[in-house]
Image (cartoon, rainbow, N blue to C red; front, side, top):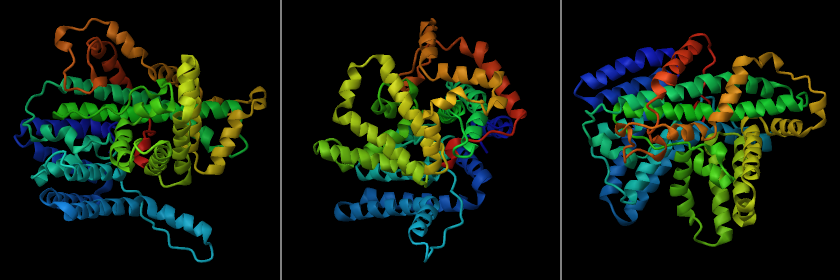
Length: 479
């Protein structure tokens, strides 16, 4: 079940919210509803996830009560179990396949199981919880029901953002009987739905067609259109999901952290990673980069730590060499910026900095999207084949219509902070002032005019599109 589906919007969500607000057992209802939501797509693995929750709950309670070497050993054991489950479901097949390529005479059996839905997200949440308790950032949760609700909470369970226990601990313990943020939640859900359905889904066929062409047969125009389409698709797909998750959290009385801050408006790759998938970037910073030494051990160790983090970032996204290379590709540019290019960038015109970021990011998305490294290389060569622009037959012209062109234009305009700048110029009523506990990008000033003018028509159009098409994947479900 995905958020941008008729069954979720018109059946699951209304019935769930009715039970959530009418009953007096909101945590229990949220836990039961989340378990049902996950079972809809991964019913046979719900017991496995439940077992992992119980193991982490017991293990972390023991960590909280222990000290010295025993405390460290317990943390290592809990993290090892979590990473073992992640490794088996996500990387065992990749490792076996890679070893078989090196040793074809004695092949290893390759596991046939599929990738467990949401495993990358809930594994990182479990690890962050265990480490935070070990660091005494906060006490361990005493209630198994509340802890299970934190892990299973359906808005963030299968595709993030990565919500740390510290983010919502107070709200888990509150009665959540106030409903003042339902309107804000509906607003963010509709914004995310429009991003996903009207932009990401609309440009997706262009990207799929371009990347589905045989290597060596794609012209430059088609290659660039496909690459730009995927650049827009992956942003509005994941940003849209994150906005829907944030909106659902508001409806339930929770505040999730922001996950995107107009990354395509970045002025360096370092800046890009402060804006893209923020919950993942901050996770690697706090639980990998800083424990490795961060930037405290000199230039060489800092560059080593950055490389390790982005190698792991690539692997987190998928078990394939394309993801590994994509992570190292981004890591290489962060290293280059760290050793001096960043200072040169600061003196360059703004347009030049943005052009540099977009060029790196788009080429990176080609590597990310390609099925194999040879396909990625062939695709980038096609993009650089200037001569083929002149003889281009526009291989995907049958897919380029008014809807696709509109989605391209809207996606480009909404990828940069033009809309917030316009909204800030609108005078919002005093009651619309931002709450001090909201994440910075959830400043609601100036949006009072959006619901009637844009949100309701956008919602109606999104539903109409959903009702008339079967194309509705979430890209980050793969990761």
